[in-house]
Length: 276
Ligand code: PAF
Image (tube, rainbow, N blue to C red; front, side):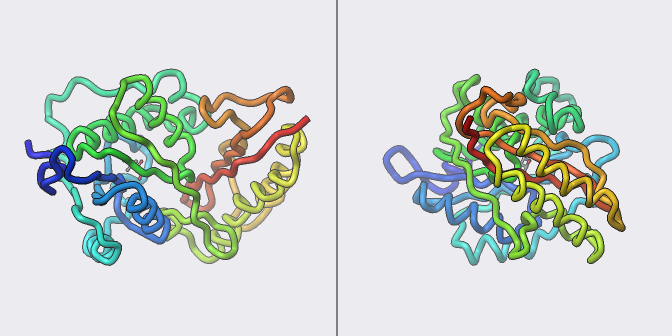
């Protein structure tokens, strides 16, 4: 099969290629990934593929927003050189056997609520890397554990791709951009603001117990709202391993939250700096 790199005529010494892997429903956050990708390479490819492997049986695979024509317009406006949008039958052989295991790290924090999710993510990302053959790939910091797991895969499996993390893009009121935000009713959206508000409150502190207490108080209040916020987790973790940090941890940590509002599950996170 011809790789995207070959299709673009990027041979040795003929320029660099950055990939922005997406599941489509492109928004301003994806545009920022594409712009960052351009800073790292001569050409940018975007993949659009709603990956069935990373959705659990009770998750939103069938209703995940699919806006292919609008996505192509975004890619054209952002000067993307190539859009790779395979069909599921092209990506996965009917008798496929081999996939990537996300290991123990894939079973904690987000992984404990979404069994198999990170195996599915890593399997499709490795396949996309093989099919497109980019020099660089850009992923949003909003999916912080996904980013950490992809960095881990690249290190563990010697994948010759440089992984770049991109800052989370937010609405002016703090809501992190997500393709799933379009599921929120106006009332859901008001409750959903508690995620970013909790992270902001937490980030005003520098010790783990205080960070978690301040953020937790905002989430507790939102649990009484109508519609209520239903918390999956609020965790303060090491950015590389996603294990919980203790009072002895110095330097950066990630304060990560996941919660459901109405029928929509949202995640968000912020980097905090811990001092004693
Ligand atoms: O973040 C996403 O949109 C997806 O998890 C990814 C990385 C494109 C893999 O399907």
